[in-house]
Amino acid sequence: MRNLIAFPLLLLAVILQSSVISQIKLISGSADLLLVILAAWTLQENVKTAWHWAAIACLLTSFVSRLPWFAFALGYVTVVYLAQALQRRVWQAPLLAMFSVTFAGTLALHLISFVVLRLSGAPLAFNDAFGLITLPSLLLNMLLAIPVYTFIRDLARWVNPPEE
Amino acid sequence: MNPRSLQTTIIFLVVGGILILALGGFFGSASQRLDLGLIQLQTWFASRFQGMQDFFTAPRDIISLRARNAELEAQVSQLQTQVIELQQRVNETEILAALVDFSRTNPESAYKAAAVIGRDPSPFLHYIIINRGSNDNIRRGMPVVTNQGLVGRVDAVIADAARVQLITDPASNVNVYLQNAEVSAVLLGSAGNAASLDMIPQNAVVKPGDIILTSGLGGGYPPDLIVGQVVTLRTLEFELFQQATVQSAVDFSRLDIVLVITNFRPVDIAPLEP
Image 1 (cartoon, chains in turn purple, brown):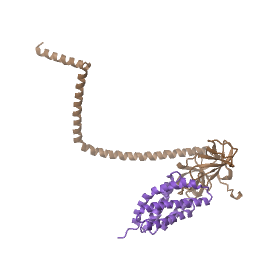
Image 2: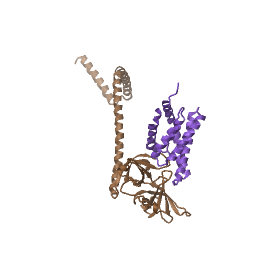
Image 3: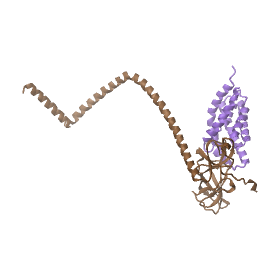
Image 4: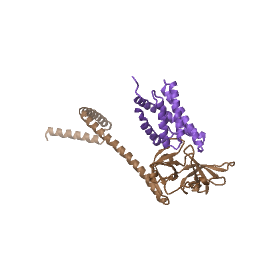
């Protein structure tokens, strides 16, 4: 039942992303709160609803963004997949895993967005997109990773209390 | 005169004389040293007295002062909140006044004011979300402006909100007209926040500072809306057209309230294109 927290939490995250975080720019890049939340949630122990969270995040973000829904779907699925793969390998260093997933997930989502936009006819230059958008966004996502991870860890313990 | 009263008179005269001489400054350094000593002594007594007075009266004062301080701090924070709220209202009023001025000076168009409530989550796209939708007769393709100039056009509409594509969006292109050079060009968005001009004829004489207006060609935007001005021009002999960088008239990072031109219907010329 507590898993239903995903709906209000992700809805709030989309609202925050659209109204606040998207306005905080570094050059032309901005942080992606939903991506960081997804990465942090998937990396928690005993979490079995990561794919559901990815689907809800994709649905809600697509409603606000002009970017096609499948771009977000591909990006968020990649993040969840990466997080699950890394969780099994570096489970003893959760922050390292968090940074790795955030880094790789941001690159993946931006690459997918770039390809989708180029295919839809937007004349984006790769160097501009990488230098002005992706690199600054990477830095901002990394900065966001620590507080979000801490918050999500506490939330995960509330949703899935450890068995004694 | 008896000897006692004579003695008293003499003492008075001597003391009075010394006093007059001292006041006249005839004792100089001696009187200064005396003054300094007296002042130091008085200071010592005064400070000790002050300390004792504080010691005996402080507990009562501290309690009342703390209460008063808390009360004043609460008042200060309340007033600060009021100041922020009022400042916000002043800013909104200034923006609205400017927009009203703009709509009065351009009476040929009908406007609907809307507040900017969000931006596209993807940093690759330059879109804003406004709090007016189909319930307010906002339709797809309607141009969006501020008193400074052209912002973009409505891209998608729901009942109470709409998404607006900014002219800086990478997929945006606007047919424009260079006022001084009297030539047409195309304004293109980019990945960054800057827009650029392309398709400027090679023989056109364009200078930095030239005003850029919408031309109305293509039917996507009404003519004569201010877009920005030319910053730098790039001319290469082997290219067909000149290019220019553009300083947009609108500060897109500080968009709070915009105007949607509701009586403009865009013309879809796609079926006519080869």
